[in-house]
Image (cartoon, rainbow over all chains, first blue to last red; front, side):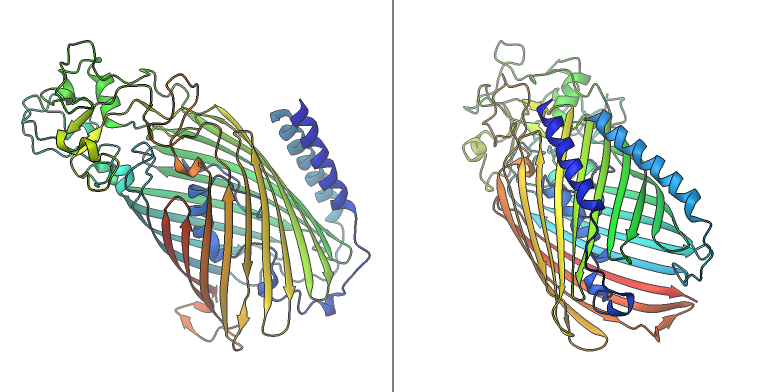
Length: 75
Length: 490
């Protein structure tokens, strides 16, 4: 019960943050550096296998924009 | 927890479809989401070794090699829609899993076993010359030494005319010798504030099923109706801790703690993920991730042995090697399992992650990642990672990287011979132990936006080669080499 309450609180905070838009608005023509392929906010495609083995060898997984579990006898 | 996840999933589905109707009316100029069909080819070779194999109860060789390849084809169906299909195959050889059946025998005789289980058949002889030995430190020649894992995935994504909404759905299937998985899910992404801010929500369900295989001595014991003079055990001497042959009809004999194995072969995973990204300025952006994951079903592995400190030990093989059982010099004696690992049938995991990327200058970029993880099995962990891409020319980029990982042990973990048979749950799987790990990596990437190199109709857009070395404080070490190509189909 306590855990559920705590979890709901976390969800509400994240949702609230999600709807708070920033005052900063970088224009499209100013995004040349932001659009650099190395600036992508996700793990690289080439990290796929490495992340899969980390999921086997470690208990933690998820929260990186990728798979969160299931599909193998691991984790 | 399950209700919360279901509510969030319904919320997400409702938002998704209501947004879809309202967005399709705008008819402004739009760039295609994906100009041309793209093909990604990625292969890796992985090798590891260590001294804490879970299959042999927390001691023994963890040697494993794996060769994996995935091909992903992204097809633009029109200006807004992209279909992505991927197929992955992974073939491994493992000393650890081969020791599901650790017994190698010079025996000969008639096979009375009719269960068509290859691991057992090899040993199920009615007139055995007693030369059966095994060791947690030696790779046996059992069929479970090799396995192939296949995974297929189809996903479909649709972007709104103003490109401020993206919806996607995916279907997933995976299969290996003892495990099958069907998964599906969907996601919805909102971009706003002139595409400076992004919010995403996704949900995934995996419905997995075990086709369990067990340690051969436990499986054989149950097949022979708990008779140590029948089946696999017929003609094979069982030794006690002193190396003396036991009377199989006597009082002090080996028997597993439980004669009930997997009663629920399913393992289900339900997850809801939230992401929030923000461009901070012309050179920096940040994102946050939160996943809520609920698992239920058989969450332990039926392959993994456990030895209890409060039960007598019994062996098959060379009595002289018993004093050296936990040392790699033991090549010819194997301890019979007390049980397979037992873990709760539900687990809630909450990982929270953050990425921060900073464009330092035309040569350097800093990519950072941090994750905090907690679950209701008592594990908490921290992951920190940094990668510094270095552009050494227009076409080549180097990628040095470092990753640190630390976790606390699960409540049910204890090393070899340290669990108690009175516990409800127990495991000696060192993946659930207290440890930290360091990973060092280096990669090189070739990029050609003009795609001058081509094979047939495939024009090479980028190629990447990467190496990582991983060291865990438990002694496990691994290396992985990955080679990837990205082609544009003309």
